[in-house]
Image 1 (cartoon, rainbow, N blue to C red):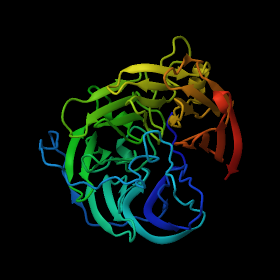
Image 2 (tube, rainbow, N blue to C red; image 1 turned 30 degrees about the vertical axis):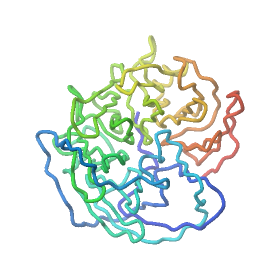
Image 3 (cartoon, helix red, strand yellow; image 1 turned 135 degrees about the vertical axis):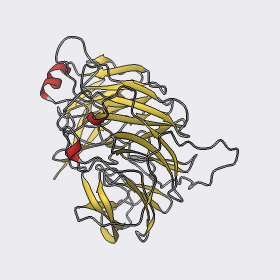
Image 4 (cartoon, rainbow, N blue to C red; image 1 turned 180 degrees about the vertical axis):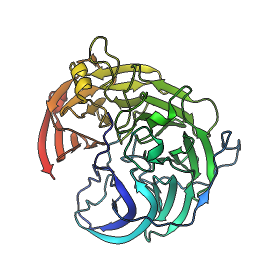
Length: 419
């Protein structure tokens, strides 16, 4: 079941400077990254560049010329928690122990997606179905592109975002110079757009709704992932678990061409893939997702309450679920609330609503009860961060530092910061 937690960040971007220190950890546990803090305030309008919905996909033209792009730098933040492991770490960066406001900027809607940083561009997506590029030093709007009309809550069977536009964190592709985002637009329809990070021009536009999907029952909340010239998009349900939805992962080529690839969780209903951190991807292109509770509570495992590994072409390769998956499905206490975190040494860390943390082998997730280790950690929502063997877990009552023990023998809570 989807729960919209503390990741709701509304309408005004405040930029804060940082004081220099000697530590290197740059891992923010919530959606508030890149020293950007988003707080509650009123709406304001700005100029926009709007592209009307297209009946046929808009794809990049075939060209031998190199695109003019914003190159990715070592300190850039181009995806949720910076890279596909979702570790949220940049080496040799000061630890922001003291912040002062540098600027703020009002936007046209709520911001659930994590802002990205590419060069001097702060890229922010809103529930108004807009993507902004803001100057990182001044906050000035470099461009704003609106891609459609968001869905009002009154047109949805349930939910708690009004209106519903772009919720999942976008991803920047240095090879094409495009920022990719998925917008829910009136119709309804979920569209993938590729927007030129320099100009705000829409270069790619296509539907990413799999054939036969009940569009209005699905929400795209998970962060997008980019690997091997493919954009990966995960779907779950709306807050309230209404209507006929399933967990899906869909993949599109970055040029917008070709057929979509897709994987549907094999459950009769539910099994959403909605955690804010989205799919994690290893260096071979394998895709790891956390799946929420499904309708089954006994009998054969329906691959819900799980961590699944999919091939780059979205074929199911392996999976893990607790031995208590049936009870957790019945109690809505599943693993779907926090995305998987890829760790050094071929390990995966997972946690969720039950409060049990699991250490898994990425190449052999183990099936039902096949974890390498488990420990009581906390109820967790969002995306964790990591520095080596130290894992920082976003708990409902604060942050916990968890150590992965030598030779994978144990997990231990070392430190708790209770809010």
